[in-house]
Length: 618
Ligand code: ADP
Image 1 (cartoon, rainbow, N blue to C red):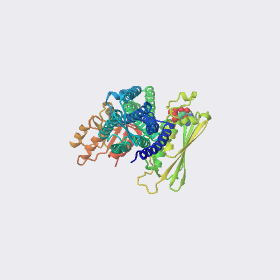
Image 2 (image 1 turned 30 degrees about the horizontal axis):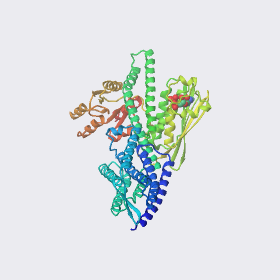
Image 3 (image 1 turned 180 degrees about the vertical axis):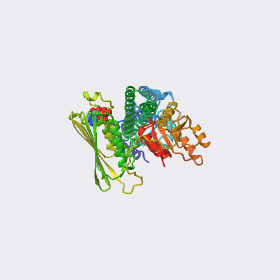
Image 4 (image 1 turned 60 degrees about the vertical axis):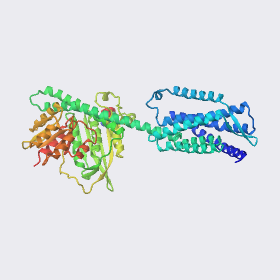
């Protein structure tokens, strides 16, 4: 090829490179960038790329004129320097994405130290090049190529850096995602072409084309600011998720730790309340202990729920349920909360509501309990009314639940605030009433999850009305059994002599369970680990029920239960007992095969239900 033709090709390529480089630079620098090591290196690569594409035409122009002046030498050396620096920064970039220095001292260098390191290398290269000579070869009276120590040093250095790049990428190939490989891969191919062309005498041709193409590809694969921003956001989200998980775990552990001693406080206080030898004056104090522990339990549950909702861990667990049973539970619970308060409790439940609905009964109950509890809490005298009506559309039953009270009421401007977490209205009446400000925040979030609505009407000093609407599916052919009059069982009398095996590593909890069962006239045997329980069953000891704590060292309750299941002929009902009261825990234990689940502190109503169900069967 004639030298003129080569120079025309080179000039055309150069113009294209200038256009492309400026285009990427404008796109890159105009956008908001993530400031990390790789992006900063890429910015430098782009700047060097710009210098190279601008220096190149000047260099060709000077060569074409055949002048061997000091200026042409300087320009040529600047051109070499930009090429070396580009290769050098590219190598640093490769080191950065492959984390090759992550375990060395270099990774601990500050940003400025790294920057000074690069500037120092630049100065060293510049000084070396300044002293190295260039010899020109002429063809048809025009400079065709350059040789001598300066271009040789440039080629050698670039080849050396290229080999380092290649080796690092091959060794660390697993650490870089496929798209990060692409520019590198193209880079090697282009350099290979470059080398082949160099051997034909076109040493300098294509250098800027190579670096421009690689910069361009890097922009579209790794360094696009938008993609980087999304990547960074994803990393931030992953970190936030991790932190949230750690928070939920911490809260669940904390809840477990608080619930264990609470079990003893609530259990023994309830037993004291039933003790005939205790004077009435002391009973009032015992009631205060129970109330305070109930409050503490409410706080623990509230914090646990809100953190679960915020971590998106709360799920709707829908199943068939008896509406009547749910309504009865609400009534019994509210009556219990009213206790001796001078409040009339009016109940009006539509008899025509379909008996079996499909939805998350547990959450519907939690929503209603929250507003009913508030009505009791914020009403000194007068009445509270629970009204449940419904509207049917196709197979959906819209439950309309309203709770009205004659309590302290809420100022109009404050109604919006009551759904904010930890926000309690600062009224004189309010400060004397215990609360966390979490109940309604949870209620609102649960309703949002179920596409439900809540409306509040209230007049300060007169009373409030909370109306909730929730859609539930109607079950026409239920698979669950509904008893005629499903009620929360009052304290039951156990008909025959029964023997219960209690398994719990905590001695106080064993005592609480023993005493609670004793109050029903039920005998019990206690063991403080799973191995002893298995031993007893293997020996053929007969029990009517097993209460099994889950969190036990060495052999957990669940593991013990699975071992028991392996024993031939084993058919004793086993109830999981746990202080881990996260929502969904019941389902977890039932799916493990446990017959039922009791959360600590043991709730009397729930214990009544269990005893009635498993120890009072005909
Ligand atoms: P808590 O009752 O624990 O303070 P909630 O989130 O359940 O938290 O309620 C938030 C606030 O809304 C309460 O502090 C109270 O000021 C107000 N509130 C809720 N229900 C009623 C009600 N029935 N009557 C008057 N005020 C209420």
